[in-house]
Length: 177
Image (cartoon, helix red, strand yellow):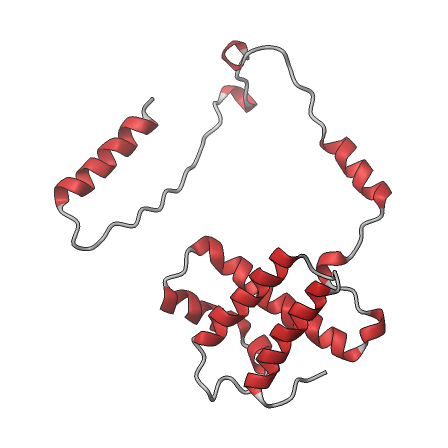
């Protein structure tokens, strides 16, 4: 079902709908708050022409979220959840509009209890009583495993060279322990 063309009403309707569904127990309060915050953050960067309808927002979600992340200098860890909240909110809203009687939000889709129990049994680990220092390191064909670590550091452009050098000294000292 395509949303109506009046954006401010549609975004407002989506937010009101999320609040209503939270009050009815379809979503947790924290989920409703996170979804609404994501919607407001994203729609703040749209111009009026782009705010034509929810369908436009949904169809262009990748480019819009990328613009939001660039404009707000969003933390990389917040981009995925913001996009997910926005996308699932619109999908759930449109699904509800089509069939309110059979609506089930994505966050509430149930996994049969037997599957949950079987997954927990498969995830249990056997704990050895040997301390790690006594454990023997073995690897394929006698080679030690390699570790790759990516570190991202944000340093102000006007930071003095001495401060930058001190940062890298500290990192080197920590990694060489």
